[in-house]
Length: 255
Image 1 (spheres, rainbow, N blue to C red):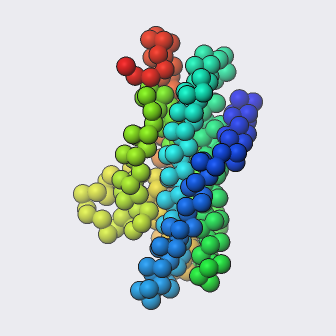
Image 2: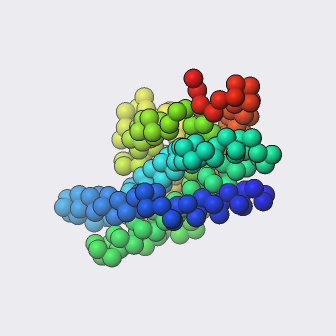
Image 3: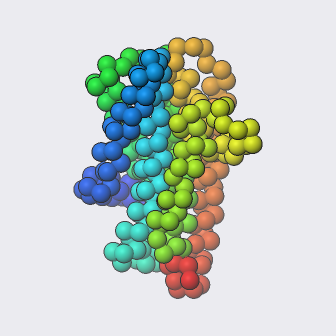
């Protein structure tokens, strides 16, 4: 637990002291501007909540992906990764603590998106089901932390995480229902979408933000938590595989 807590504090410190890592937060209001302008131009003020939610979800995924890669890349190029891998403290606990900080920072995306939409567009973003919205938000942050942990663990074996980050960005935006509900996507993509926790998060948060009665919110919340737990289990397994590989080959990247 001490390793987890120390790693959590370390990642927060790194985030707020490096301008490059807060670029996601700086760019997010412009995404809100784009989506809100589109819906307002179409006279669809009833879509204000969805227009504010999409950039927030995109920001959560981008932050998760970028910071998970930065954890490994920065440690590698600063000569710290070898020490972390060989230290007696749990490598997985260290990664989980730092990725939990990444998941927590996702709350900033939602707060910023909502605040910008209300301040500059005078959007009415009241919540029809605030309890479910908060539950969905917290579950999304937990699943984000678990996903970041898996990605960071796998990134250890690569020379750089940049290629992975570029490849995983927009496919997840689309399949995860970040921009539009997955119901409007082709039928063949739905099974793939449901394997991504963001698709359940998007459905739950959109429904919770509206005034209409919610359909099966427990199913959506449970799906987010189960996918997060399954991903965390994969992270534990990956960490063991990575450590065994590194210790047997003496290399911290793939040949």
